[in-house]
Image 1 (cartoon, rainbow, N blue to C red):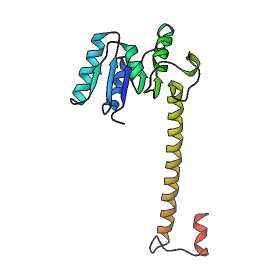
Image 2 (image 1 turned 135 degrees about the vertical axis):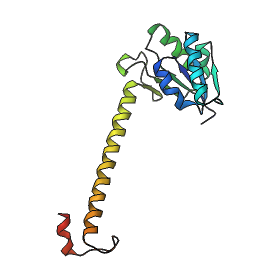
Image 3 (image 1 turned 90 degrees about the vertical axis):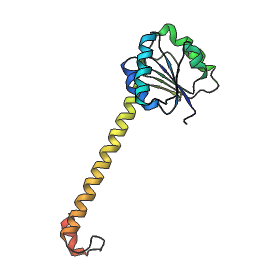
Image 4 (image 1 turned 180 degrees about the horizontal axis):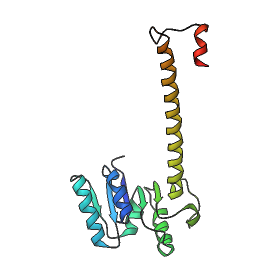
Length: 168
C-alpha cells in the first residue's frame, strides 16, 4: 500500500533505475556515500517533487522498521548478518529483495519473503513465457477470424460442416 515504507540501500545505477517506480511509497534511502545519496534524491525529486522521501543515516534502524527492503549493493558478509538481525527483529517485516546477490551467494536460509536476482530472472522468464502464449493465442484468433471473414456474411454466424475444410 502507499502507507508502506520501502528502504532502498545503495545509490548507484541500480538504485537510480528502480527508485522512480517506488515514488508512490514512503521511500527511505540509505547509502554510505552521502553525495551519491543526495544525487539520487535530486534525481527523484525532479521526477516527482511531492514524493515522500526520507534520507536515513542509520541503516539498521531502517532495516528494523521498513515494510520492504531492497538492497542495491553487492552482498557483504560483514554487514549481512547485522542487517539480517535487524530485519528479523522487525515487526513490520514484509519483503526483502537483495539485488546484489544470487541464491547460491546467500548467507541466510530460504525464506518465502526473501528474493534475489535469481527470483527476478525467474519472474522475467515466466512473464516472457506468458507473453509468448498470449501472442500465439492472438495470432490464432486473428487467423480464425480471417478465415471466417473469407466465408462472407457476419462473423458471429455459425458455419456448416462444408466450411470446416478451410480450418484444416
